Image (cartoon, rainbow, N blue to C red; front, side, top):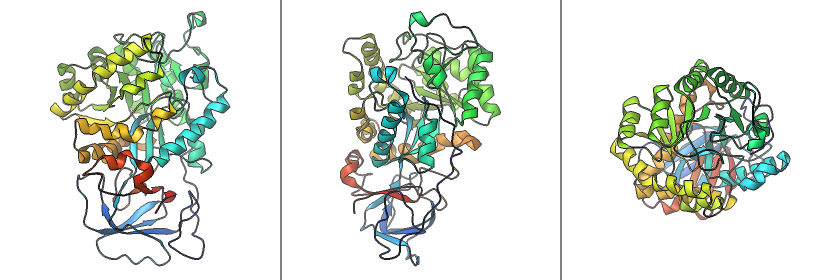
Length: 451
């Protein structure tokens, strides 16, 4: 996987522009915010409670929600959006996303020009936003340039909480080298992917500290390690445990010194439990965990960021290949993982982990809707908004954006969806954003207005 590395943005919001004179109800140009927007006659899903409010009015000023009231709100000059009883809800959050890798086949990622990869990733990010995902936590890839362009208003896309390079060991998940690339001198980059910032190889506690600090220097909001074997990497059996406990602890200490946390890719009990012993705050996947490991996650208050993997995800690999076979094993554990999460009331976040397929990325909302195999629509949507936002908050001062996301509350950032129907009663409303998301607002700016 290759992509260009650019300097990280400070995450500053572009300056707000005043609405043009004339009809205050007319939609502005895409991505332009008026001084104020007033949503009237909406029923609010606030991202925290699994119910809709009585008919209400919501005033957005600048990029924040200024007032919510059951009574009329006086807002002279504001653009007015008549909700007509539709649902107003927070923008969706995907907690396991790879902005640089979601829409490009793996063979192309391994060889394509970095400019091409960034342009395709930018186009895919706009599609992500127009599916109603106003925030993603990016857990691997050199996303710095794309994030900077989005934050500066040069490209459309979701807010990005970036991890930067996936940090791995020699032969681990994220090491895409060939045998001819060996040996590596400890302390030196492992491959072109390492140099460009998609992955980072580290084989000692001291190297871990360096690689973690590199990502933090670039603007990482959290750190991602691959603590066990993976599906897509060519030299990484699923049963393998990669980092030693002192190595993981070194990464945790470096991240903690910066006021943030480490999340790890881990499927198996041993990989998960070793990471927890070292102080990791979040487990990605956990698809092959056992009962004892689930209880350990509960007892330590560790987050579980897991995904309802669709079987089509395996189509990114040739049928019958080693990667395809590993995918079958991982996907088979999905049901049990969610049953453990429910049984032990684990702090569970939602993500998709779509890779290497724009067609599959377009199913992001349907993947969310598939959570109703285990949860009610209300539980699923709370997870994808307010609960996910709680995990984002672990980044503390390393958060790239000032303000709360994932909720419709006074003072929160104005990331809002105006939705046809009641998604708490019928999750299929969420599954078809083209038809049912009438207004998509991020940071107080409207990116879709299909009223």
